[in-house]
Image 1 (cartoon, helix red, strand yellow):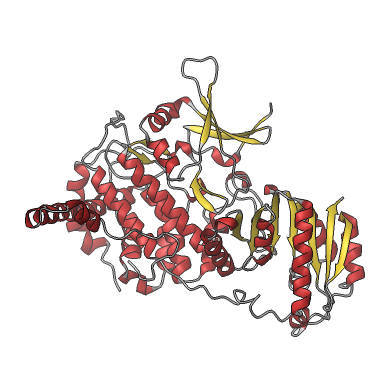
Image 2 (image 1 turned 60 degrees about the vertical axis):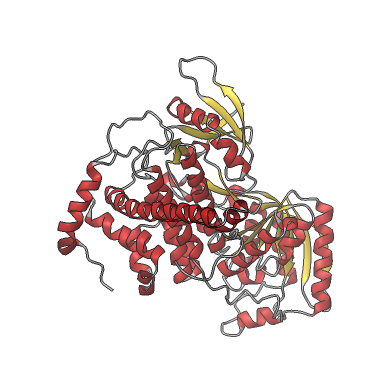
Length: 463
Length: 96
């Protein structure tokens, strides 16, 4: 058995995460065993699982030997790891609410979250869930040590995205430990001073951080004996309640340049679009993929088709509003629960970040998917972003084992629109050039012309 | 809008803060909770806590009052007190 530690799990001395034969495991180190046993014996674990707030796990038992053995857990596996800077505003809000609900529940059982990192939340299907079983520690009075963590990881980017621009959620990529509150306070519009949530949890919080940096006694030795409910539990319940009300109260616009794309489709006739739907659905059914990545998913028309074929589908689009609309859609419909929308710009996909550039993975490192859907997106990359066709084919092949790709020729109105204000420097951008580029990385299994448009659909297998 | 900090704010706030902090347990965390943030939270949670306790007390008094006023169907009244169920899918449109 080959154990590979997960690079992002080094911070908490209570445990670590590793992969063994491709399966993610969690090791509870001796320093975390008491808190873990309290979580399990207090009834909190059962309550969290009952509300689908924490990822369930099987206990594999202690490591043999040693006076204080480690405990090994095998959590339910997450099919696609995503990061907060790839979420839409609704996803970030729901992840924040899951964290706050877990904290409220933990307080009832004499425990509290010892951290509130947004990286501790993942999407199981389209539902946010806490994955860090070791985040719960006995609460023995005093302030909530993760309050600032929560504000930096969840509340500040949420309010920034909602009150300025939804693209600002991806701004948190720059800050592995959350957006600094002082910076968020500067960037927020002035009207947010008049709203209780941003005023209390960002603006005044940021001022206090600077003004009172030396006021509190340094963390030191304390009584770590757990007790059930302390007199300060009610204060933390009040704080959690305030954060929850503030989080629920955040609202934002759901209009963008791309959100009406399908409604205002100009590219080609309804017959060609209907043919495209039929062919894609048939190919997806035939390929019986377990995991599909839909690149340039827009509001998820074809992601939903993929989900209907039984595949877990990651709907990737650069437009944060489209991803938000799709997320709201799939949360309402149990049949679409397998769709996970993510905000990723393919011209600049998520890089590896964090300590030693290894804590958070690139998009490609989280693959390969069984099938890549790249429909009506190649022209945006090849013409809109000047990516050579050979490079485009190489990147698509690195993301999936198979692909369904649509070629949109220069005669298409959508490409004409891209070329309207620029020189046509794309000499090899035609069907022959496209197939030549594909041929280096893929075997072309099937090819369907989407008449009466000049678009072509390809079914490909990576070489 | 100007938020008072620094010189003008410090004497009163620091006095209140010192009192609260003197009775506070030290915080232990593997993450840095931020000294200023902990101090701020101490004050904020104390104020919010008073609000929560007052609301709970008021709610309890109302229930007792209603029971005395109409001794029948207390269960129905309690259900009414709990208020409407929150729907999580759609965000409210108002701000905090």
